Amino acid sequence: VRSRDRIMYPVLLILSVLPFASFSNPLLTFHEENKLAGASDGSFLRLTKLKNVLTDKGLECSACKTIANILQELFVKNATEEEIVKIITFLCIQFKIEDELVCTAVVIEFKDEVLSVFDEVALSPEEACGVLLGPDCGRPYDPWNQTWTVRLPNVPKPPVKPVKPPKPGSPVTNILFLSDIHFDKNYTIGFNAECGEPLCCRPPNGPPPVGKRAAGKWGDYNCDCPLQTLENLLQHLQGIKDKFDWIYLTGDLPAHNVWNQTREDQLYILEVITHLLKMYLPDKVVYPALGNHEGAPVNSFPPPFVTGYNSNQWLRDALDKYWSTWLPADTSETIRKGGYYTAQIRKGLRVVSINMNYCNNMNWWLLINSTDPAQQLSWLADVLQKAEDEGEKVHIIGHIFPGSGDCLKSFSWQYYDIINRYESTVVNQFFGHAHTDFFEMFYDLKNRTRPTNVVFVGPSVTTYTGLNPGYRIYTIDGDYTNSTQVVLNHVTYYMNLTKANSEDRVDWIQEYSAKDAYEMKASRPEDWNQLIQKFESDDKLFQKFYQYHYKLHPPQSYCDAKCKAGFLCSLKTGRSHDGSFCAIPPGSSYRELQAFINEIQKC
Image 1 (cartoon, rainbow, N blue to C red):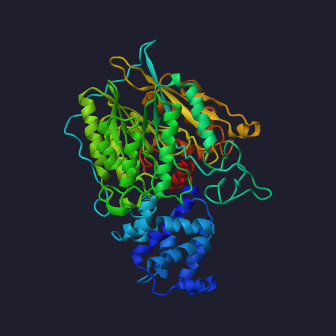
Image 2: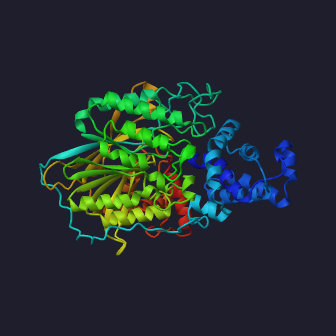
Image 3: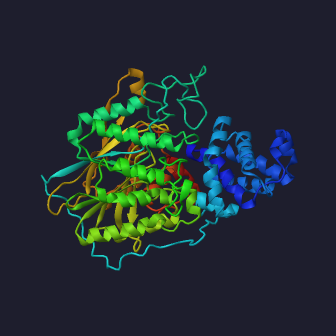
């Protein structure tokens, strides 16, 4: 099971408890055997089933429903919060979801948020698991609208004109793309890198036992980014600063120790990385987007209607404070409201930074009301209409890519419709979150064949998990009258972590140029769509893409037919929970394909 899913199982336990009010007998005062023996036969069988489910990769849906059913048996009425925490912690430890340290900490970390949400909402197992894991797993619960729509400005869509390539010798602009840094301030060289917890190479792991790997100087494939690697990257970028003009930073600054992060921890990481960027690249403007790991707890981004202690106004105010280093003053209002903004980069080009946590299916606050949180998509439509009216082109940056299984269907589909309406204005989209390297297509839904847009999902700085660190430079049409502002090419760079640790020398080298590696004439949506078609028939070219997807450190050397079908499905699907563009292999199903896609889109 992916670490992201594994660490959320205790939270799934909490989520399932609340609809059924709790138990009157403090079961945890008995020995474990008495607890199990005291359950009904049906409950005991489900406990046994759960143990099997949790050790079987890819069965998140079964686990979710099994947990909910177990808790229906175990919990009756009038349990205290302390009793709820005890039983959930016990189940987490008993079934070895995590070790005792992580189980104890993660339940405490999430209890306030989840209990507060379920003061407002009561879900059946089908509804809860449908929200968490998508409609294939159950009936998604939406208390006000199962589906909702954003009312677009009442202006007809202008005719779509083909994008002409720039004339030879036209000016170009280069953009540095950084994402998913996941800086671990507690990374310790020589500590256990195979600790069995969701994140290793840090206290309290200590040195590894015999036969286990120790954390290297420059990082480890099972750990997050140490300070020395981050600074080495920034020193390298300082040395090539003339090769890029500004920076897109698409979120996820903190490490993956999500079971013991405080608000103070997250603000510290935000401050440190802002300081480092200012120190090493003082002359470069950074356009940031918010990741799902900036919250405390992780994924916790209550919309503005949540006030008081549970509000994340503390984070939005801090973002405004630190992002104001680079952004104009008129971005402050929407950053403080919802963590999103727009800014003019230069005449004719505008950036829009979207807070994709408002589509995150692990953001429990959306269970209360997920209808256009913070009115962000309505705002987006208005911004794009104004840009269309003024002849501006727009780059959209964000963290969770819209086709991700982590993105709620209603949000993703509305976003897709907005992009298609403004396809002549939104010329590029840049996202992170997956840690890997790929792209997603948007299509005209009237004929379902004409590509309208492309989402570039860029590489991570962190090595978590099993990846080399990387960054990217996009080349776009330059600053001149009637510039298209579109991506013309991108070049990805990486560091070979194994070599860096063995030789104690770091080299950031070119991994590939998209146009050269894939023999592309241009980088328009139709060119990327044609590339997918080439992948279908040219397996050698596809296998090259497969290697680049993992920054030259893939989990296996060859991607077989089922693996390839999953990748091709992912590339064609720019909106979540939509298998309509996918070719389902014989003997398989979209659910199986989606499970594979979730696995390759690790975060």
